[in-house]
Image (tube, rainbow, N blue to C red; front, top):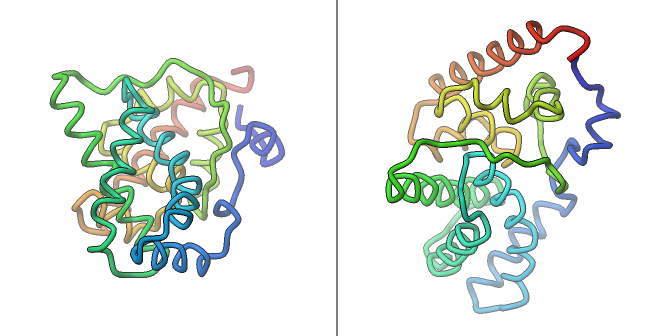
Length: 201
């Protein structure tokens, strides 16, 4: 059974970005590049949580440590960044994705979806309602486990990270058409899983 928008909001899954205007993020990036500690702290508060969510649902074992590593790399390389707020989010999640892949290779393990409930507020954007419904479902772990790694990456970057198709393509190093196809197949897989569960699931 699919969840309604009201139920999703009750679970802490809401449409829209974190609430700050994009101009504020751009201003903080520019200030942090000039050395403002306070500006980077605001950037950290805005992006660390969705980064942690992305890593957690990709099966990272030490989410806190890996999130700190991602944000530390963002801080080290901040002087190299140029672009708008959307580009900055894409850049941050590209770093997060690469760190997640490196961590997975270093531990020599397959991705395992974290066995835990969603307790944090997750900010999402304009991804399809089906993706939102799936992420609000009480069997999120099982649903995500039914996707291929590429499909899961795309869906999480679209919904948890709130990236556009173009930004996801940059983050994963794939063409936009390939990202759109992966998203379509991921949503189709989720629909089939939900249909099999039936109205009493």
